Amino acid sequence: MKELYEDAEVQKIEHEFKQLTSHPYLKEYIEEAGIEYDYILFMMELLLDSPLSADAKREQILSALLVQAAFVTHEKVETGGQEVLLGKKPRQLTVLAGDFFSSLYHSMLDRDVHAKVIPVFSDAIQKINEEKMSLHFCENESEEVLLSRLALVEGAFLKNIASFYQKPEAGSLAETFFLLKRLVHERNPKESCYLSAPANSIHAFLEGGIEWTGSWPAQSVEQWLTHHITRLQKELHQKLHTTTSIGNELLFNVLTSWSRDFIKAEIK
Amino acid sequence: MKLADLYMFLKPDIKKIESELERAVEADHPVLQEASLHLLHSGGKRIRPVFVLLSAKFGQYEIDRVKHIAAALELIHMASLVHDDVIDDADLRRGSKTIKARWDNRVAMYTGDYIFAKAIEKASFFENETIHRVISNAMMEMCLGEIEQIRDQYNWDQNFKTYLRRIKRKTALLIAVSCQLGAISAGASREDQNRLYYYGYNVGMSYQIIDDILDFTGTEKELGKPAGGDLRQGNVTLPALYAMHHDSFCREEINRIIGRSGDDPGDISPLLDMINQSGGIEYSKTLSRQYLQKAFRSLDGLEDISAKKSLLDIASYIGSRNS
Image (cartoon, rainbow over all chains, first blue to last red; front, side, top):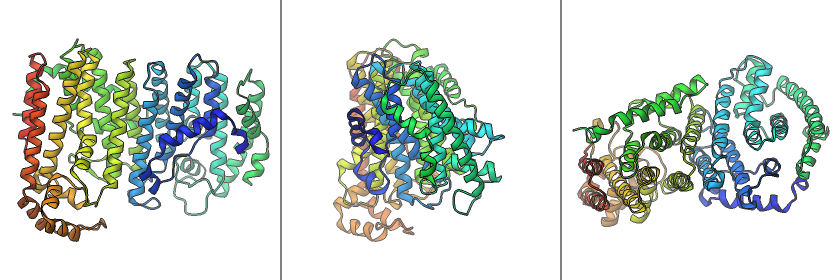
């Protein structure tokens, strides 16, 4: 898969992201922030026709990556007070690392040229936290509600930015794609730690409670995920062929790969 | 006299900020709404908004503009408290249950992140890069300060510079930028912006040093927890730092009794006596007074308006507080 992201600009952004987020003490106790490469490609697509300078575009892309890194990092903070997995110091530093990434995202946007996009970012973060709260409390009265909440948590950020840059088709693609990616992630027991709000809520919806001691995912969850992964792959495939244009070739290639059935084979 | 008596003339404007904060934390999710309101009504002094308003008086004061910055800074402070309670695994704050204790860590994380986002949205009322730069830098420094505090826990070989940098990031910076941003948002002159920044910085340093002194000298009733809490947790503050630098026996005893493990050290009253007798408390009081003097001097050159008198009175009040 990595060859899909081989591009000088992607590498430049990756390098800057690593420089920004690298902290010698944090590194000793917690995992370094991961890069969501697909975010880079989607952001490049959304900014393709923008009159912003290359530097300003890079700042917005880095900012989006930092928001994503803050979300992922804070999702690792365990629900209870006891240090089940993380341990005291890693828990403390996980909270602070997420806050650090949040402050960095804001600092990336501190030039006048980004003034109009700051409220777009903060509005999306608010929406996502509202939905995460609903997922956390497993308030999903139907499958549709659960899926739309998951789609919002995974895709609202890019969808908001897409709407700001008047690229609704790309926003809709992002929503389907990142929901698909989340379900694939949860379907893979090695990747899912079954601690995230999305994983908890899926399990609670299907099993009627969040208590789970067996191996993840449970059979019912696995079947449900497989069904929706297949459905979303088809949906992605369809959207990809009805979308008028995707200017970023790398993104087109990534989306095409994900809409094919090799993913299903891979996770099996 | 209460602190609020020192800026009575701001009462209607503080009420406006209170309403602004209530509007800002409105959320669709009932728990998010309840958690944010719980935090809002848990008895904060709103000292940062007060500094914003007083500093804005040195420019073109328009409460309907300035309130956005005042609310943004208070929201940043509130959000950092919610996350601090997760970091410290704290069940109580100002006598009431913390969000993480009332619900759980994840609710606290989402609430804090939501409020941080609201703060940035409030600040975005101003399309002014200096304002965003100052805020994002302050948030970043606050995080780095907390990371360093965790790194330096149980490190008994710290120097004074490390301590001063830590309390700057922990407390003084947000007060300094409250003053600075109040002035910027009202279009005060660059000189006045700087004067107010340094006033806030020096007041904040003095405030935190006094807080650190009170942790040693306060009674359990005054503090709401046993004295010496910082030392128990391995946090080195100025009185202990002074004692360790001037009394090698004291350093050995701290090392022996508190150690590096984080286990409950039991009765630490002999250590508290030793730190008291070392002159650490007196030294800290002197340094706190020096910062206050600098705060007073920072205001030289500002126009003599009622806001200046309030700033001077607040600094004096902070210098004389004993709880």
